[in-house]
Length: 402
Ligand SMILES: Cc1cc2nc3c(=O)[nH]c(=O)nc-3n(C[C@H](O)[C@H](O)[C@H](O)COP(=O)(O)O)c2cc1C
Image 1 (cartoon, rainbow, N blue to C red):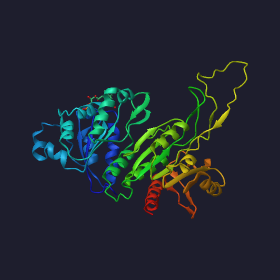
Image 2 (image 1 turned 45 degrees about the vertical axis):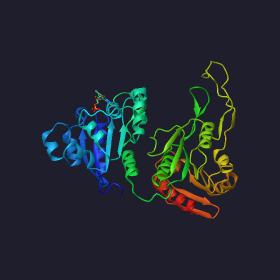
Image 3 (image 1 turned 90 degrees about the horizontal axis):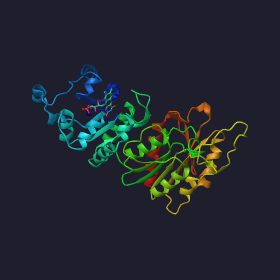
Image 4 (image 1 turned 135 degrees about the vertical axis):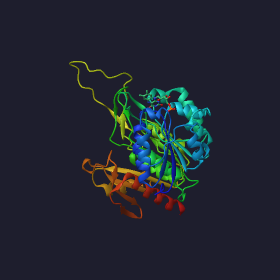
C-alpha cells in the first residue's frame, strides 16, 4: 500500500478527460491516499467542483486571489503540503505554461512554487500532442524533472479521431504514482535491464502486415517492476496500444529486425528479459506498393523468410548479460518445449506460458507461468500480469545478488 497516508495535490485542467479524474480520485482514496483537488477555470467547464469536492471529501481550490483560501492555506503551502503533485488531465495549455514558467493562475503558480515531485498525465487531441510546440514543451519539462504517464494511443472521446493523445487510464496513473512514491528497497539500483514487449508487425505491403495477439501487457509490467526496484530499464516495444510504463526508457519499433537492432544497441546490461512475441517469419520481399486485386488473376502467395532470433542472439552474444530470460508462448507440450529452448537459446530461465486460445492469456490481463531453469521447474499460480512481473523482478534481484 504505497499510497497509504500519502497526500496528493490533484490538479485538474480543462480537457475532456477531466471526467476520468473523478474515477482517479476514487482509486487514489481507495488506496489510502488523501486527495486535495485544484481545478483550473477550464476544468470547471468539464466537471463541477461540487462533484470533485464530494469525491475527494476536501475543499476544491480554484482561485489564486481568493482571500479566504489564501488565509486558510495559501498557495505556497498548497504547493508544498503534499507528497506528490499530480496533474490529470494535463492540457497542452498547462504544459506550455509550465515549460515557460508562467504563473498567471492558481495551478501554474502552485506548479512553479512546488518542491514536490510532479507527475503529469497529458490528454489532448493527437495533433496537439504531435505539434512541435508541445513536443518542445514536454522535452523542457522532462529536463525539469517533471514525470509523465501516457498519453496513450486510441480513439479520442470527443471525436472519432484516433492517435496518441488519450489520457492514461486511472489505474495506470495510480501505478505511476505508486512507482514514483515507492520508498521500498531498491535492490536493482545501478543495474541495467533490457526488456522487449508486444508483437512485431512484419509488412506484406505498405498497408498490410503479419502480426499476433500480444498486447504488451506482460512485458510492460516487467519493465515497470524492474524500474520500481531501481533498475535502469530500456524497454524495446513493438506496436501496442498501452502507454509507456513509468520511469522506463522506451524504444518503439515495428519489425523484428528493428527490435534486434534496438536490443543490441542497449547492451551492455545485467539482465535481458525477452518477452516480446517476435514474429518467427517475415515476408521475403515486402511489396513497395499496395498489392492490388485484379479480377481473374490468381491469388498471390506469400513467400516467408526467417526473422532474427533475438533471444538466441542475446544469449550467445559476446556482451551477454549475466542473466538472460526468455518467454516461451506455447500451445502444446509447454514444459518440454521450454526446456529445449534453454540450451538452444543460451538462456538462464525460460518463462513458459500456455497461450492456447482457451487460456485467454495472449492479449488478456492474467497469466499462469512456469519458471523453467536448469535447476528445475516452478509452477506459479494464476496471477495478474502485474503480479507475475513483481515476482519475476524480485527473482531477478535475488539472482543478480549471487
Ligand atoms: C470541448 C473541448 C475539449 C477540449 N479538450 C482538450 C483536451 O483534451 N486537451 C487540451 O489540452 N485542451 C483541450 N481543450 C482546450 C482547453 O480547454 C483550452 O486550451 C483551455 O485554455 C485550457 O485551460 P487550462 O489549461 O487552464 O485548464 C478543449 C476545449 C474544448 C472546448
